[in-house]
Amino acid sequence: MTSSITQIEDIVLQDDIRGMKALREHMKDGWLDSSAQLLLDRPGKVLIATGFYILRAGEPETDGPPGAVAIGDALKALGGTVAYVTDEKSSTAMRAIAGDDEVIEFPITNHKESMEFAHDLLVKHAPSALVSIERAGLVGDGTYRNWKGVDFSEHNAKIDHMFEQHPHSVGIGDGGNEIGMGNMRDVIPDIENLPDDPCTTTTTELIIASVSNWGGYGLVAALSIKTGKNMLPSVEKGHEWVTDIVAVGAVEGMSGESKDWVDGRAPEDDAMCLRDLHELLAAEGL
Image (cartoon, rainbow, N blue to C red; front, top):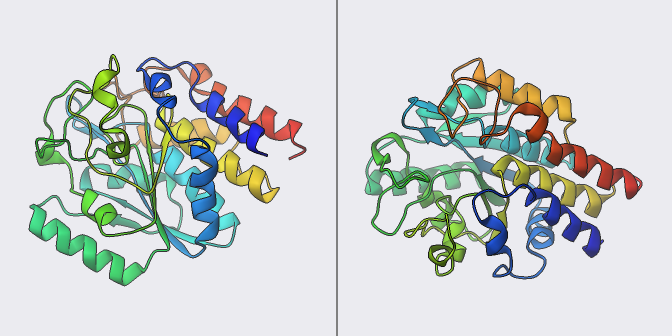
């Protein structure tokens, strides 16, 4: 099992253009396995945060929501329940693919009110665990910045407070500025192409990937191996989620353009991760 989950790590870190592979040697052994195990050990309701605002387009990006829904669908297949947490900037995209699951809008406000909202949310939903996938996290100077270092704090809810108040969480990111990357804060500035001032918000477990959606699919593949049940979305479903959110405004993150690409990758290139994961699970008899 361990070797096959290590192969999943290889798959989600392929075609790396940002330097996430260089981060791998600094990660603890078995990081993907322990991320999946955290969720298996804590059945119940999971809150999944996502939604990354693209300043130049005034819309959320295509990376994040598909991976979030893939994780949510897997957790439901295992008997759990989920709700998605985002802000008004990304809520339309999330609702387009979340089906009947609740999409919670976290207000864009100051730290005090954000802290209180996070507390009330955790009391109301009593989640067994939290997941963040491609959600901007606070950097060292107290702002939210994109991969190029541009401040977009006024457009981003401080969902970090939810993770600061919960003891069991998984963070997924592909650039160093996402919730969870605080786990690697001391290492990230030394890696070429990654931020000099990375995210400070930590999570219990961290998943790194070339594309955050791929990290989400990798988590689902790990859950599939550990439970003996293939819960991965099809390649077609993965692309359908992207086209569905583009139809309501989401954009490709690197260009800011309204097209069914993810992180600079055309659909056929983006599909390589799900295709490879399905082949791996098939080889495992799933």
